[in-house]
Every structure is written in C-alpha cells, then in structure tokens.
Image (cartoon, rainbow, N blue to C red):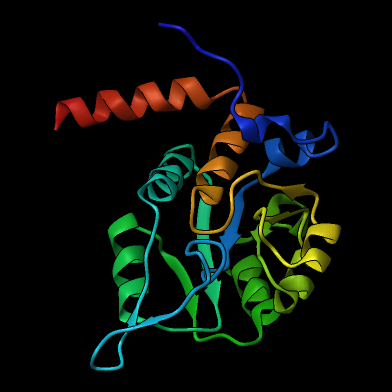
Amino acid sequence: MSTGGEPPSARFSASVTPAARALRLLALDVDGVLTDGRLRYGPDGETVKVFDVKDGLGIKLLQEEGIEVAVISARRAPALERRLSDLGVRHAHLGRGDKIHALGELQQTLGIAPEAMAFMGDDVLDLPVLRAVGLAIAPADAHFLVRDEAHWVTDAPGGRGAVREVADGLLAARGRLSAIVEEHLAARAKR
C-alpha cells in the first residue's frame, strides 16, 4: 500500500511541527470552524447546522491517537450537542461567551499546559484563546486579523474539511497518519 504524499496540512511551517508533536488537546470553535459559519433557521425557529463528515473522522482519529478534543462555543444548539455526542467529544463548553475562561477550566481539569494545547477559531472573539495556546489555528476563511495571528492557517475553509486537515497534519507531524488510519480500519473491520 502506498503511503502517498503528504497531506496539505503537513505543509505548515517547520516552526509549527514541534508544537504539533507535543499537542495533548485540540479545542475547537463551532460556527466557522466545525460549520461554515452560516446560521440556518428551520420553520419552527430551530437552528440547523451542517457538519462535514470528514471533520468528524478527523476528530475520531485524534481521539484514537490519545489527543483530547474539546469544543468551546458561545452558542448552544441541539444539533451541535447531538453531533458532539455522536463523536464522543467529552469536553463541550457550550453557551460560553468567555471562551478564555472555558479554556482555563479545560487546562485545570485535564492538567495540560498551555503550550500543549491548540485552539482553532475563525473570528476576532477567538483571539484571546488563540493567544493563550501553544498552537493557534485558523481556517482559510477566518477573519484576516485571526489569520494574521495564527501559527497555522488551513487550506480548507471552516465547515468544509478544515478540522480534518488539522487532524491529518497533527498526525502526520507525529509520523502516525498512515498507522492510525490503518488501526482505525482494522478496528472497524472487527465490528
């Protein structure tokens, strides 16, 4: 089996690689990161969110590698809670306008130093959290001020595979991308 070339996300600068290897937690914003940032309202006023299945598999692969995945969002939505449950994301800080405070709670609960944490955000309200972690990540379509401060800007836009690109890049930086994919496939075959 060919290992193929490196994933697009593995093309980040050499300065990001040490942080990627040391990472123990990836925290994600939702709107503009896990979704494309648009809000859709159903006929009864409920919010409808669209998630990319590739992002979901990337989250699962990170979890299988032992990297904690958390979500910090100012919004709450039943669709989001359902998706996080389906993915087995144990650390969901929803309805949290003060994201930096939620990050501090995660740090304390998990005993992870800021330099071993990454956050992926897309807008200016995410800047305090991006500034507080060892690896600041932004999707391609993030606000320009966020892109300017990020250590890593993905090729993919939010809600369209950006989280998967990050997952692939983090696993590739550890030299584990092909191996964890094969382990995942083998585990699925046994089910």
